[in-house]
Image (cartoon, rainbow, N blue to C red; front, side, top):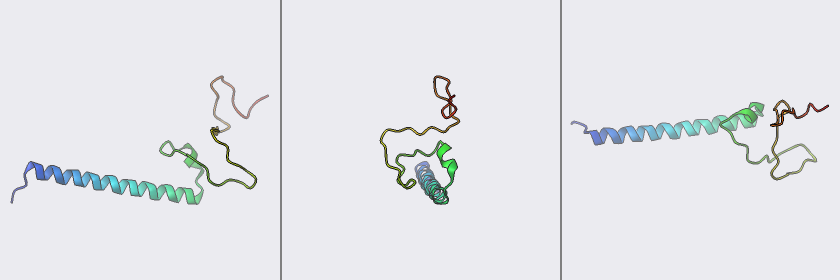
Length: 85
């Protein structure tokens, strides 16, 4: 029994789709593990976008359209936030 080009192409596409799904499942599992352990490097991870922070310290409240900036990041006018004279 000889496989034709169409059969081989179908097998390759199915294999690639399975790899893509497995990779996504592994990525989500790792992200969930990092969130549960409180990994602070998630804030600098370019693959992760923080949409909403659901938990915070007692007494804090949610504010819309607020950009959180690390203290070491420079602002466009050259002033460093948190290091004002």
